[in-house]
Length: 175
Figure 1 (cartoon, helix red, strand yellow):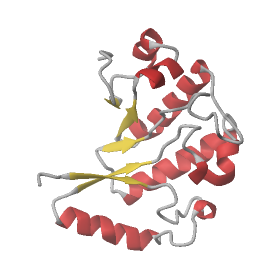
Figure 2 (tube, one colour):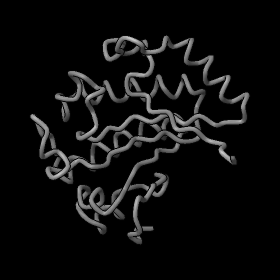
Figure 3 (cartoon, helix red, strand yellow):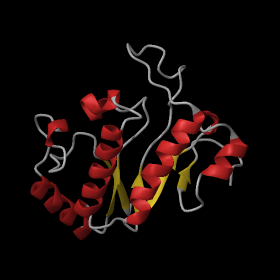
């Protein structure tokens, strides 16, 4: 059917050595998952990892989801990105999500975490840097609402590096 790439939402998918505490019953052992990646590649598929680092989509982080903006949180994010890049044997892209982080999206959440535009931008730049230092291109969702979360179109264009792959879910004329 012309499929050549599969994006794998890591969430609780694999018991990571760096943070086994986020694994849930049924999470794959690391070596088992590496074998699955080999199987996918043997079928001609390119596996790409994805974690969604938006505060609206971080239940998979467990307690770390409530530590946004702390050094513990930053270290956690860097650890799991680096280990996942190693597991995927340096993939071409790493999808970081970063969408839907707004009060409207979280209106039914018992706890809402919405970063200010400058803080979200700085957090995103740190995530991008971890990927780029490993030779992997960061990838994010960016619809109109997400661009507003980064401070609007002008700030988004000024602050998001050109190396970042942007998936648009609607037409918006950003790049």
